Image (cartoon, rainbow, N blue to C red; front, side):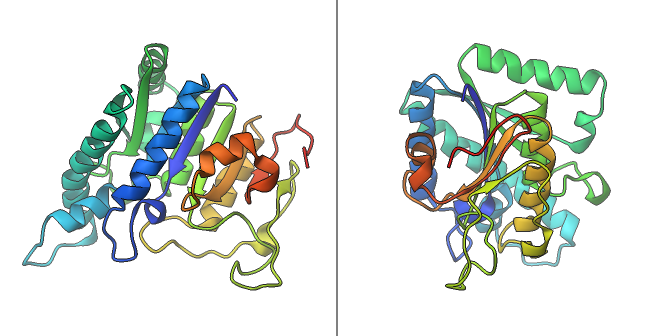
Length: 261
């Protein structure tokens, strides 16, 4: 792996009460710093802005869903990127913020400018931290969720691997809590897993396993390996690199790659 896009979902970054889990966020930063020491380029797609903002301000009047998202994301994105800045600074890693919208991925000048921006960041050892610009996006122009955004980033930046960190280990043959369910370790190109996927959304985010499966199936067809893994597991990113055969996860293989285990 030379270039990895890592997507961290809201359920990974937040505690059960909805507050940001700074301890887990710090642990993920430690692991990303380790990846960079292995000369792996990393692009981080991070959720969590709305969750941050919701805990920053108590509003005493009603807001509609768009107003809430705009207000809380504007407040929360500042806090989120500030925390990343402080945590990565301990490793002398510079970070840069990229806020984007779905229309920026249409062919044209905006797409090329966005790609050029992240390219020059990587060339100068700056870690791009990407999120949707929720302050100006409205419903019809929004990404489905950050799973979709991370897939588009992986394709645009020609990543080798996309890692989608969730709060479960991967795709199961049944409900993850059912002892009879087994994790599907490897998915060959073109395999249909829709019978195992439930259209449920995560507790704090807009996505769910259906979204991750849709993104993984599409991106793997473009020659990029996609891994779904549990971001709540200790040292998950390091273990995926060093001990993949012993680490629970689901990998969607690109067309040219054969199963390794």
